[in-house]
Image (cartoon, rainbow, N blue to C red; front, side, top):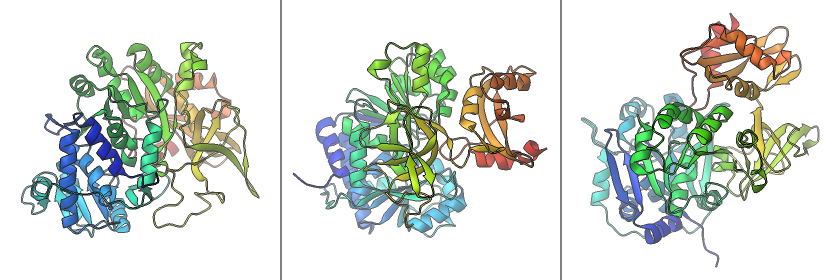
Length: 531
C-alpha cells in the first residue's frame, strides 16, 4: 500500500496504542506538570483547529520561541499536521541573527513561552511578524494566550497531509561556520529518521523507557527525540528551564535514557555520583554536539554503571548520522579498549552512507576505511538535505554527485567506526603541517586538573598559525600547571604540535547549541593570546 508517510501516523499510533503513557514537564517554578498521550492528542486536535482559524495555511511558517515543555511538544505535532511548517527559533542566537532568520522564513505566527518572555520583548520590535501567542499571561500584554486558544477551539480535526514531501519543519544551523542557514525537513524525512533512530543499535527506545531530552527542542528538533519517543511509546520528561538539580528530576520521574551535550554531563556528574542510588533507573546517555572526553565516559560507565553512546550528526541530517555502540566482537576487549571505541563518533545508522574524500582537480577521490587515513567526511541519506532554504546548492556544501560536504575531517576504520579529527576550517596549519585541535583537546582533558580545554590557531608571522590552549582548571590546580600540561602533550605529540601558550579562564564561551565557540574565544582573548 502506497500512502504518505507523515507525522500524523506517529501521533495517531501514540494515541491509540500508548495513550496512557506520560509526558512530564519541569516548570520554571519547580513543580511538575503531568498528563498522558491521550490528553496531549486531544489538545493537539484543538490546537490544529485554533491555528487554522487564525489563518495559517499549508506551507506557512509558524515559529516557536520556547523551552522544552508539553506546550512546545503539542506544537511539534499540531503545526506540521495541518500542513504548515514548524520553525523552532534558537533562543541563543543574537537578536540580529534571529531577526534575519524570521524575515527569511517569513514566519506568520510566533508562539512564545514565559521562560523567554523578556528576551522576546527585546526582539519583537525588530521583526515583522506581529501575530504572537503567549504560553502564559505577560504583564500588560495584549497578545492572545495559548490556553485560551485551545479552550475555545473545536475538538475534532481530520489530518489531511496529501504529500509526504510537504515540508514539516524549518531548522537553522547554529552559525558556527558563518551565518545560520535554514534546512527544511519533510514529513517523509522525519518519519524515516524516526524509524532509523528507534533501531535497537541506535537510540533503541522502547515502551518501557522514560526519555529526558536535555538537548533543547530548538536544536535540530531535539535530535528527533520528541517523535522517536512517542512512536516507541516511551514516557517523556521535559524541562522548561535548565534544571537546578538533574539528579532530582531523574529520581522523581525514573528517567532511563537522557540526551545532551558533553558539558551538561560534565556539570551534572558530581551530583549524579553523590546520588548514585537515587538515579539507579538511568541506563544510557546519548551524547552529541561535540566529543565527550574519554575520562568522562569512563567515569559514567565505571562509577555509575550508565552506558554512554556518542551520536554524531548535523542540522542538515535531521540530525542523526552515526551512533557509537560496541559490537559483539568487542566484548572480549579490556575496559580501556572499549572506552577508546566508545570515544569515537560511531558507525552510520541504517539509511546513512558515509565516505571519506580527498579533493582533486577532477573532483573527489574516495579514501580507504583503515582507521588511519584522514579525509573530508561526506554523507547522504533519505533525511539529509540536498540544499539550504532559499539557496541553490553550491560546490562548497554539496558535491556534483549530491553528497553533503559536512565540513568535518575524519577517519573511518574497517568496522565503520568514524572519528572526527577536526573541522575542515578549524585545522591549524603550522609551517605547512596540519595540527588537530581535537586531538590536543582530548589529550588535555585527560589531566585531572583540567575541566575544559579548547585549542585555537593564532596567526604567526613565521609559521602561519600556532596553537594556543584555553583551559578551565579545577579549583586546586598545581602552580606549575602550564609546564605539566606541556610535558603531558610532549609525550603524545610532535614538538611542533605543542601549544605556544596556555591561557587559563573561569569559563569557556559556548555556541547556541552548547559547543565551544572558537570564534568567540578568538575575539575575547585576542589581546591576551597575541600579547
